Image (cartoon, rainbow, N blue to C red; front, side, top):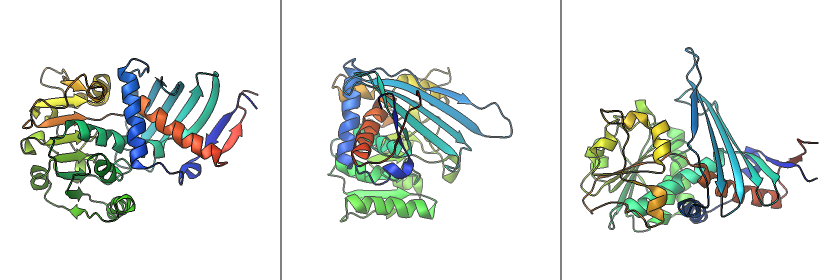
Length: 325
């Protein structure tokens, strides 16, 4: 069967392992290929659903990974901003060398790996050189893997702290850390401004209502605040920074418009792919308070999706469906 898709469900992918180090390497390679001009990543398309009685939004991303020669289409739909119960996301891969479809798969697992990998890459390039402490804010799907990924990229971190409001999410975050780093402990915090002021790296991936909105000026000199498209970050966080970066300025203009200044213009000092490529600094000085806006780019979804799909297919998972027969 030639024109057939491998259909891979969430269950098919659940126990296909990729280590934090493997995912970080895959995502780093995705940024480097993009910086070299080998990949393409148009700005995300976002559409609020025009229904007054529902809070719903849909996203679409298209991209090409030049190192893998794979085209990817990603779609997401979320109904309700405070719950993941009605959040559905998929990615479809096409092989540009053969022109054939490869896989259609659930994308939750991919986002849960790609996102903390991006956070770890930001921290590796933008945290001050002697960073020793990290605070994770939020325990949802996007945040539960963050601490082990940070430790993988920055093994010198001595103090790990966590702020969360959902017991299951807190327990899962701690279990995930201990899976990869069984000898490490995490402190639970309640006073968020005080914890942020004592941390070299602060990662916010949380909802708006769970805590006071995080500000860059809470940070001590040299601190780094990473916003994972977080509603829990204050709109002034970007303007308060001494140095501001984004994974993509275009994506920031779509999903981070509330961070714009009084004139409505969103401005940053550097994009992450350029920093990873060594063409822009991650900060100007050790005392800079750095703000980083992390928004998903499909050039980082594609390599993670391809790795998971390849391993899943080799393990006999999924179904082959001839949609074009």
